[in-house]
Length: 638
Image 1 (cartoon, rainbow, N blue to C red):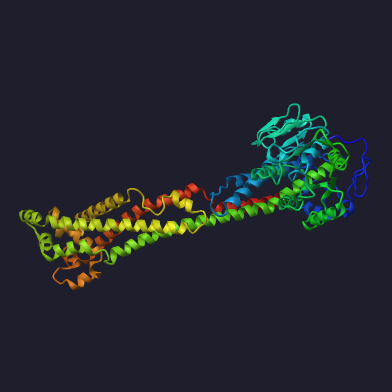
Image 2: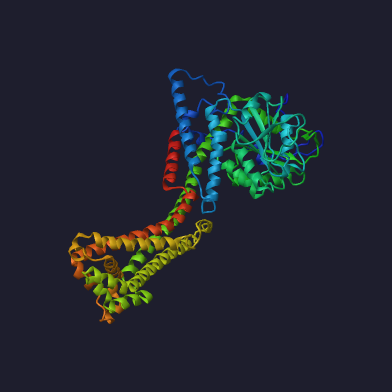
């Protein structure tokens, strides 16, 4: 970016160049021009207290101002301590943001990941490098609309062709960075955008592959300054927008170029508003300005800048011209831009102002951007809470329904009730429970075994069906609740949906069978019943267990109990053996054991939903709290 021997007059409206071309009228746009990097006294005063440690240094973006005395002694040590503490705060913020994960497809994910990546990229590519090193070259990014002539302008500013122009540019995604050969090392993968592949340009400027940065070393560029030709911000390829934004995030100064036909496009103002919100040092170029109506056009463009809070941006106009050779302007239409950038690059104090303004603006933007990111974290936290609550509620309700069904007698119907009435009415069960002679007991066992086994199987089938239906209902409830949350249908599908998991019936069957055996063991081991049942044979324990189970299933609450007077109620049979207190004790233990086994089966079923939520890696409440804390620490440290 060679500086001309003499500073030419800035192109103004109504003036005619030697080549006969009419130049656009300066009007209010040029008369109100201010140099990039000049901060208003009010803004600078407001920042001075919070960013005092930035004064006297360039924040890593350039050298100190010539009139600044070098720090020494205790003052230098204090400044170094402040800088180190500030770097630690930034690194802690970066680590906290990097640890945040969003569950794709759920509310807050897209916005959250975009905000997360934007902040991380700017921390990694712009802020931290300038805190860690004082000799970072000043990076000037030339960005803007398709067909605005950015590449032609870059070649003109450098003084030789370093980037290609033409119809290929709108469809390519290979930015070109021009710098002095002495600065090429800084822009290597080790220091600048380390995840981005790059290639060094050899000979004639040629575009790189999509997604690849082209490094163009040129002796025409002064040391300590680099020019970057970025992808079009309004490219037809969405990925190019993100790519352009990535480079703009790493730049100290934006030169934004748009045309007289594209300057009102929404995409243009989206990027300009980002520069405004971050207080980025900014120059705006309106290119391809026609001779007819140029004054009105410049006035309208200036009014739009004012209306969008960019009235202080440095402005330039390039007339419509075909005076281009070797992909550079042959006339002096770009001289005022070249002069402006040469002034910024050549004056250390001015360079420091430009870089420091952008640096402080970016750091200040974190105080709003990180809380915005936190809001998306909180959105996902709330989604995770709703998803977890749906699982917890469904399976808690399932266990409660099972407990209610077990105790209210609703299970005692159909085949189970028929089997019970058959064996109870016949008197065989009573006779079996009262036998004391082993020989008679064996004979009785042969007579009643089939009916006892049938009753036992009916109980097992009924309880198994209860467990399976309860688990199925819970899964259906979870799926229904999850599907009310946008994007959660994918999680439902990954969890297996509302269908029961494989092997549910077998697990329910085993749980009930083991419980029936456990009840028999309780009867045998209960010390209070030894005087009554110590001499009872095996079939008696099974029969007593069946009677106890019928009692636990709420027989007394059934209509059959009230209508059938010929069969003794289970409670009367059991009291004669155990007594009231012992019966209550063993009944409670048996009931609690059944609930525990049903709960274990339900827990296995809900595990697929819990596992799906864990795999989704939704952020937690502590993530939001820590982000707010990191933002507060940054506000204090800056």
